Amino acid sequence: MIKRLNSFLENKDLKINYVDVGARDDISELLKKIQVNLNVYGFETDPNENELLNKKFPNRKYYEYGLWSSKKNLELFVTNDPSSSSLYKPNISENSNYKDSFHDNRKIIKQLKVNVVKMDDLIKISPDFIKIDTQGSEYEIIRGAIKILENNCPLISLETWTRDVYKGSPTFEKIIPILTDLGYEILDMELCAAEKHKTKHVVQSKQTVSGYEIVFGRKNLEMIGDNDIKLKYILLLDLFGYRDLALFLNEKYLNNSDLESYILENGKLINNLSVLIKKSFRIFQQRIIGEPFFKISD
Image (cartoon, rainbow, N blue to C red):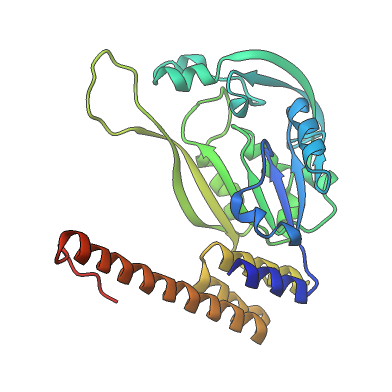
């Protein structure tokens, strides 16, 4: 399926514009598979990490700024676990209620002055996919990207907290309404962080939810004039598994027969793979443990 996507993009002479906000380490394994057709625009507030990224990936663009709702100079709180660093101060009193590793990872080791800007003032391309993972700054980043989000239809994946892990940082209750007001809807919402409370007793217990990864998509494409932007959005929906939505939007806004055939063929490949996995599992059951405990329907 990845090869087919790369071929489709190359035949149409299209590149996916990926904005990676909180760009520490590298892009995801899935995106690496299409990186020949990917323009990466990364933002990493930690200056040392930003320098490493630019040296390691010279074909990508990593900006020496953090993103915010306005241009200013802010304090970056660098923590024991660098990936837990934030423009908001870790909430010691809140985090100390949970297991030691959660608290220890967010202990401040130094503070740096960093420059932050609005995405609207810096990004001149039309982003197709935006990932935001910034340990609390998501709301302010969105406020600084209103024009971009109004005039384009990027798929958005962001991680957000459900509680005050960082002092004063807006949680998911504020993030969902601002994106909804901009014409986006939740496509998926998955647990990405959960912790156990600290207690002197050792007990079997569920963890308490502390963070979600939420995927947002543009609900209405009528205001998007460029059909290539719509096409790339629909391709990304298909790539991430929202195949019925991809077909629906193509039928409503593009009626592109090449795109329709591409999506339907991907669906067949996925269905065939699913059947193959079920049959392989059934054979495994019969050979290893005899008759299956339950039947898996085709």
